[in-house]
Image (tube, rainbow, N blue to C red; front, side, top):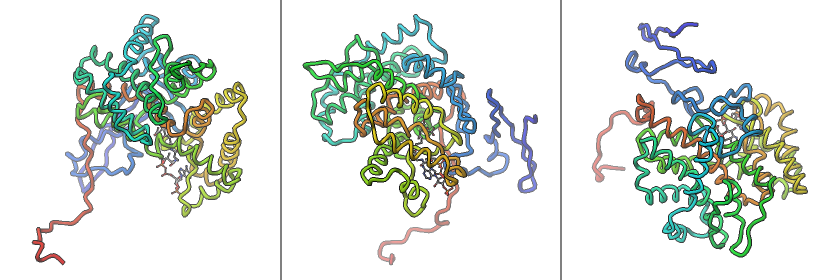
Length: 429
Ligand code: SDX
């Protein structure tokens, strides 16, 4: 297959190299296009534009394939844990027993946040959205570790990355406790990652939360399934900020802000609010589906559709199965799950959704599991952010370690006023 594409533009022959990825994706490298032709490309929403070459995650949207460092998500969901998968994403290989033990020890050693950060929590109103607290406190925690600014050397980086991954969980739990006017519950070194988070969220000073194994496993799976997803909106934001050589904490705090939007990570909260509204309206979902297809209604079937997946999101399939298992194990009958199933069934047979290849995405069922665990809806996107942290860290490292890496600075097509001159205020209309 040709290694170049050639075409004529304004009477000139243009020749651009073709790059092929290890999974067979092909791209036209346009990095010399403007020098050769004076033209740039325009691609609103970047639906056709690759921002980088990456070795971290592979998605085939047509086939519904997702692999972390080449390993299918289905195998990791069944056999791995969030911490082991985090190591895989951040270091590029599955850890040996010694590496995993060392990494787990690093997470435990770094689970406490600086005691003075408590004063920052006091400054937030009790109704502050936990995503606002999370992004602020990630940046704040960087201030207590000035060495984090030396993230460009591998040794320092590994410690800072472990610290960030561990403390994002503590910050999130403290934010939840603060929002409920409850005392902060400190992490316990005897608990593993997800169990410690549940402990910090739901224990009381006078008694520890009862850690049910099926609940701990369900939350660990939710974190694992959210751990990375190639160049999505928030990960691209992390890479954009990292390209200016800002710190790991500044870049991931920016990622939290991008994830917050209801079209991205905020969708899991929007799905639950949608299901609750449908339930309150006494609708079984069929009326809502009509509204979701009507452009004038502004309603969207949240948790459905995806820029890349034009097939069932493999994560949604895994979460749906675990959702059924958890609710059965906890003996929970959730009417919202029935509505979700009705919506999925209706949408998967409706021409509007079929023509547009709209399938359930990762956010469609995840909220039902989190609700069954007792996580409040305003914390859903925070759970997504904790899960996505290893992916952001891995993409940050890949960006700063790219020797040929340049600052991300897209071009634009100007559509504003042609040249005009300053008019003194006395002469303005
Ligand atoms: C995540 O990128 C990632 O990888 C993200 C993520 C990750 O792990 O990081 O996977 C996590 O963000 C998942 C997506 C969560 N968002 C939602 O569930 C919100 C609802 N979904 C949509 O808003 C939408 O599907 C997006 C944002 C996910 C994708 O938007 P696109 O690719 O820009 O598609 P579009 O808005 O151009 O829609 C194409 C057509 C339009 O109709 P027409 O103009 O062609 O007639 O499909 C329609 C849209 O109106 N459409 C929907 C719809 N999603 C798209 N119609 C009703 N309900 C929906 N959910």
